[in-house]
Image (cartoon, rainbow, N blue to C red; front, side, top):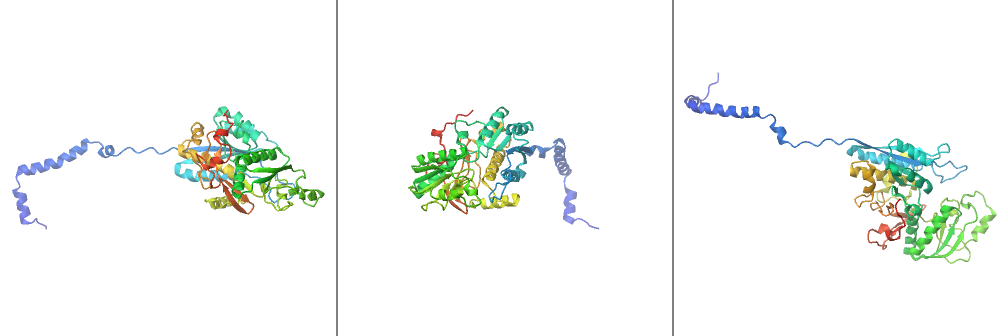
Length: 423
């Protein structure tokens, strides 16, 4: 049996009664106080913020699948051109969305002979609650859709029409242009020619309206960068780039360039019918550029810097093919929505549309610099790569071309020259 030490027992026995009473009172007081205070810990802790609500954003894509070629064409546009870029853009948005409790859904509409009306497709998407429309369509269809959905608050992202008139006299306040204008493309080529001091140009113009529009842009770029078009001729020999056998017109085409003084031939052939025929068939050995050969473009399989190689590989795994310019442009349109919604934490187009032209908005897009929209015409500023089929040749803006805002504004129509008055 345990007994306390003698001195301890003695102190306990000799402790005065009033001291023992005081000790008991002190022990009881804190307990009573705790019983009267309902939840002191809860009062001391700050209130926790409510968990963010899940946000789902639908992005619509209206495009026209390219028909399969009637004969062999090594570079025929794939049926899912543009659509595959949209799918990768949605996947990228959802990768970020997992951390921000945001999800993105693609609603695509393929225009066919049975369903050819882009306006009807846009209204169908609007009826489902879609407020972001990506269009991989020609200029007239872009204008028709923009006007049809003007009162709905929807944001239209142009990914397929390079026409300068959409950024000028026929601009629309609800349209944002993802791909470069023709002026930006030809300015990029003109800057490279200026750096190389190839100042004398031979302009060859195809028969279509698009060819003539490209030629107009090239003329303007030549004036802007002090280049000289020393000769200009229309192409009248047909689609020789797609011809299978030898024809009498080939001999005529070979002397097409005889007797001309120029440093570089510029071809304007947006359909790709004959431009690839010109290189290595000029009478004098001269380089060729424009819509074929040395080409200014938004995207190419040869681009691999600034993280582009990873994007190329991801796209190839997703689509089982190489990424084309239209794929990139649609991807960038979808990513524009994702970047803006993530930043503003809302998918309300009334908030997103004005934010897109604020300096705070930028789009990382594998171009070495962040991209942004010009407030005066809603054109996405971007670097433009100048490529030949197997290699990257240069990137515009070229070194030495300066601007008070950003060198990117040396490409295309600047604020003092714009004719855009938003409707």
